[in-house]
Length: 269
Ligand SMILES: NC(=O)c1ccc[n+]([C@@H]2O[C@H](COP(=O)([O-])OP(=O)(O)OC[C@H]3O[C@@H](n4cnc5c(N)ncnc54)[C@H](O)[C@@H]3O)[C@@H](O)[C@H]2O)c1
Image (cartoon, rainbow, N blue to C red):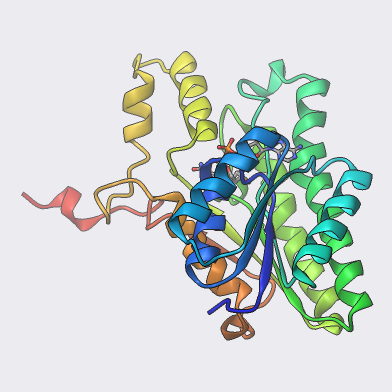
């Protein structure tokens, strides 16, 4: 599906980003796994390389909020692979956990800087380089089901993800002229460091004194009877990066395995 394509994934030192890198490699792409944490990026690259020995994978440090570093890493990826066909804007932080009245400017600013501004910086650089070679390519932005509705104790993060969904529509509309397809995925309930942090915040405020484990279990996708895996989010991202997805444009697609829906089994004996 992604043979002869090179894909760059941000925030891929673990969690969903690593799963996306793995899925892209499984579908035949060359992969650049980047992260603020250089050692974590190198570890993801080593894991993907050993799972897919025929696949070209590089791991690099890249802070999505640093335009100069983004420029250098994108240039280096193009020098290594000849071109970049896809970008997955996955890096994000959830730091402003708690009540809106206790929210601080510093924590809000960091979430907006990484989740929104970082995504814009990386997208601009990717598109500029794509335009240099005559256009073509795809971007997948990682939003969240949290961006679709109110989310207590993580309001600012949710607002940042609502911004990602709206930006996805604008990017799609503006960059179609360069034959660049842009879509977003909205995960939920993937057992990563970020989700565990969210569970701890919910636990602190839980009137029923649910422990973090119980909160994490409440995010098990009922239709699957288990949590969604990072690599499964990655398979959908890989499809959206492929030429087969050209009819899907500017969309934000939930990849939660129905987490937000009731299941009939809950009502039957
Ligand atoms: N886990 C879930 O259930 C879930 C649900 C909805 C949305 N998401 C989204 O999925 C994406 C991945 O989340 P995750 O759960 O794997 O989280 P995670 O915290 O495990 O991974 C995020 C990665 O981003 C990196 N990062 C942070 N700041 C960065 C920066 N400035 N530059 C580059 N990298 C940076 C971190 O080092 C980390 O490796 C995020 O966009 C998140 O908002 C996750």
